[in-house]
Image 1 (tube, helix red, strand yellow):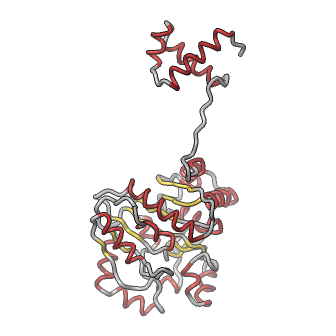
Image 2: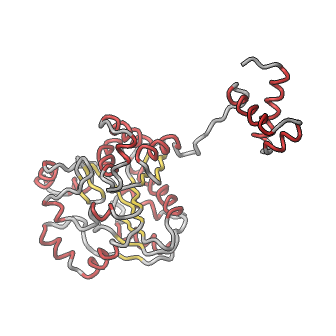
Length: 329
């Protein structure tokens, strides 16, 4: 479109009033003695002719474009992708834990029951300076594994509850028992039974994601070679804070399953909001399986894993509708 100098000036004047001075179309029309509809057409022309350009910048530390792509592809209520200059696991774990705390601050209400599973990536949720959550019960969803700093899921549950004036519900048991008989005995302990009953009432849960490969799952690394091999042969692609899953996100029944003390895949599917915290591009197939199987409907991750997740979804031939259908069964 060829514009006269007068039209260029008019476009610029209308655009300045509207975009920079935040004036209404009606006010602009009154001042310039033209109709409101002409103002609207002039604004459209200003965009089309490049007089006005709009650029959306991501806040520092976040990749909003990738976040929106994950939301759209997987139908997620919560998807936050962070940018990280350092991809070292310890750095990512601390960063993702802090961001997850911010997400929970905006999600959890006093009417919720918050469940926290064991995962190294969750330790940073209760970092110093974190905003307190709405006071609500905080439930331990899995047995414990201690981190290098001595922290474990019991410590995490207690700190989150204390900071929010909520009530912690913890139990003393390992995440993986030596054998199925020991696990059965542990599950009969009163505090474990109370926590298991409360787990059925959880409305918001936070879990970690592990791939069934060396150094990509603490559970994989801690169990004996026979259990690793047998679980892999039965189709395990990953674990969601101890809940073993196959490539389609189905709960996997394996001898190792009977040794794990914690929330199951079937239980996670009935929780309103399940936020997964994951790092490392190699975990993309496991995270995709969790999404397809409806175990999680929220993701906090970093750009490297987000891109890998979109890539493996494309390689699997999944479009938006196909992936989104997996959450509700």
